[in-house]
Length: 78
Image (cartoon, rainbow, N blue to C red; front, top):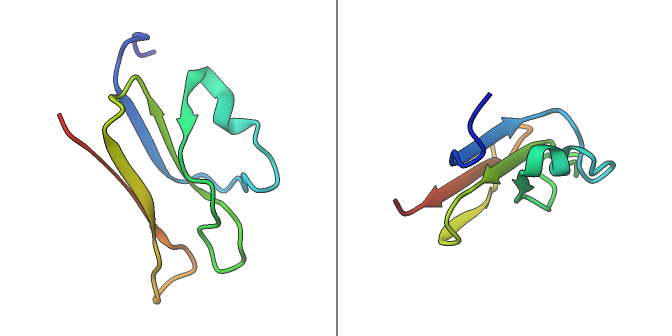
């Protein structure tokens, strides 16, 4: 278990469509950043969760032509 003040970024394909359910985004005080669909079937399966990070960050979805999922990104200044 991580200490409460630890900076955390978790991101990837969680295989839970947040357009259908939002229960995952509130677990353990994490903030889920992506709100639009990330797949060809208009589902939101790719998530970015953050905790205890500074407010200066950028994130988003990058459309891809070669796969079912779009790419997601997160960047911040240390």
